[in-house]
Image: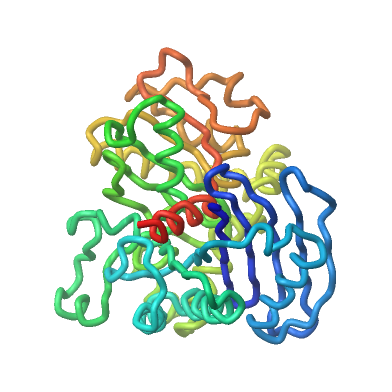
Length: 400
């Protein structure tokens, strides 16, 4: 058997997938929302051969333990049977592994202590991830649990890429450095792109653009992350749905002095009220594109800023890599918006990018080439599958 339960535990949500890794097949998936916030809501869907309608219900979920009980009840009532498809391990998404974790790791008491200590670097994520691990251990006490860290793929970055130019002793004392995120997605997509191209990933130099509500770029050389746009937190880098991305730090000092923003207000501004939402009033790229199409000036500017930032990173990473075999788009916006892809690559013909307009506009799903056959740099769209990547890494650890 190669069935793995993948868990993504948020502060008020529990996402899960039951995956047959050897077949790369999701058997079931679900979501429990509004944990600890009064009445919650649960969704459960059987996938594959036993697929049926998505089952939804309102549930009482005061904590993550209750959410796991809801999940187990959904499997028992709607399938598939966890006796017939018993997971041999549980894989957990953990956002921040710091500089301590550079590969998937079997969860032990010491690992949990480390995840907890790293919460200072990811206060919105690591405590919730840890709560999910503890609840899952109670629900599945007889199988190994494996933590897969968003930051791990980027631990191959050289010091020149991860070091901030501030006082060295202060930075070391408070663990201030660039960690990068979306690593599970970047790892999966870079390998899937290599498979599509029929080349070993070790032979390729890629720029992967994970464009969703959160967005990041990654320079991948011979299968290793050598630079990425997110930094100590997921705030740095590209313009996102509600996050600012790169900004002059002096802007924050100016707003604190002149607008009276304290640390919490500044945090809310940069993470929740900025990005394309702050510029246009639209956090969803589909809404932004629709407003732009009818000439809404704020939406035009927001879209242009979004695309400009992507081009800037593509150019910078091309310089770092020295050669770019493929630019790869993934995640919700990257996979679905031909308009964003066109704008992001506009003007990059100088290093061999030739988009095929018909291929780019095609509604086709799955991994595909959207550049011309003559393009020196291939441009691909490759759907990401972070859950499958977590399941694969979990299985590798368990079988090692």
